[in-house]
Image (cartoon, rainbow, N blue to C red; front, side, top):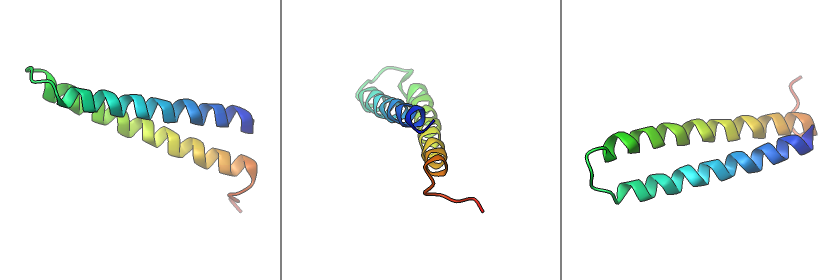
Amino acid sequence: MATMLQYGLYIAMAAVVVILVMGLVNITRTNDEQASMSNKLMRARVIAQAVVVGILVLLGIVVGSIRLF
């Protein structure tokens, strides 16, 4: 279980980096849809970061670093 969570964590962190780079590239554009796309990418990045934090918490529980009771 811990191994699957680790792979999921790596994939989720890579997704955050990809979304962040896409957002930085989008800032350099000057078309009409730039603002709307920046907003969508910001939302996607925040959601991806929340997934990373959730996986980290689950991984801590599974490994035993975080005790619930």
